Amino acid sequence: MDTIENQPQLLSFLEQNGTLVLYAVINGASFEHFERTLYEIEPDPHFRSLFMGTDHHEIRNIAPYLLELSLDSPFLNYLNSLEQQSWGYFALSIFDFDSVFKHYQDALFASCSDYERVYFFFYQSEIAYAYCKEAVEEQLKHFLGPVQSLLLPNYDVFLLNESHPYACCIHNPAKDPQKNEVTQIVITERQLKAFETVTEKEFIRKMTEHLSSLSLAYHHWTLEQKVNFIQYGIEHSQKYKISSHSNIENYLELMLTYGYQFDETQTAWAVEILNNNQLKGSEKISQLLASDSAIARMSVAEAI
Image (cartoon, rainbow, N blue to C red):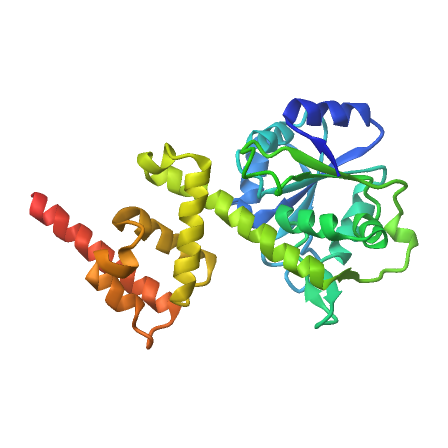
């Protein structure tokens, strides 16, 4: 993978490849209201939900989208201004919108060793990056299809460089999906493991930003200290069968409030809840948050 390190280099790359059409593959779930945001910034956007014409066509708030952009597009500037890169990624092609749309809609389902048909979250940038990184040549050709280039956030370097340089996966020549028999994309066991790794990296990155917004002290820690704190929290939360990212996020927030070892010695009420084997992980988090709210209310009452 070649590397494009920042926005000026990205725009320069696009200008040098002026015969290509620029598309954005959008992860709609990363926006509060993608279509509303798009129309507020771009007066006449050319876009379509990849769920259009499928069983999921009524789902709009978390749908993936294909969006055609020009170099002077206000929405291109908006995407490049976002600090987080979970919105999706850029794709360049000589083919028209309908051809690229058909390719990506066909890619919504893939096959892997255990299942003949699985939903493929290729529009999540971390998943696309992991897939491309671990793909053999034929897989990469199939995944790119009519697309010459993908511009993806480089998830292997985010711990060293918070600005997220782009990794550029290039394939030429591209193929017109309208003229080829549709076959499912194949996901290997190695790629499935890579998905887990890169998804955890993205979760850690998001948590460093989130916890920094909650705590000035945490904000001033080194990146290594921030990551160590989060990894410690992930490891300890899983001891208590707390596994979903949303619940781990709550666990980390409690760690930030009550300290690293709030699950062991510092807070008896938390120790009791966490060690209650009759509770599911989500139930433990619900009770912890309820107790935390009660303590906060008592503190306010005492202050008054």
